[in-house]
Image (cartoon, rainbow, N blue to C red; front, side, top):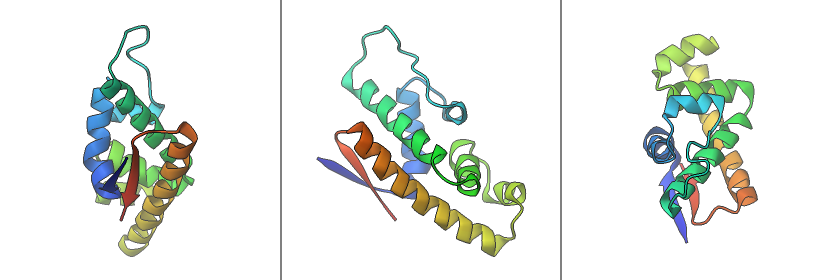
Length: 127
């Protein structure tokens, strides 16, 4: 079984839902995923949420520095594109090019990490 999801929808909405189910706030993911349920019996839904969250964080961390700053700023810290644009120091057109590159990098890394973790059911992120 495979879920198909738009990458931007996944990053903006689904990642927040999965991080909440795994017992974390989305902004905490900058430091890396944590296991808040250590030693507590959890159900499959929580385990799956923890795995998806871990997969997404690893995929973001495997991106280049510029891509990681853009993805973290916009999708994890919920900053506006304008704020992130100022932080990375690029004008509008170059920033949008870099954002598209960052999303492509994330999609590739997410697929690799998901395969390494043998995550089932898997997510197929599309543009």
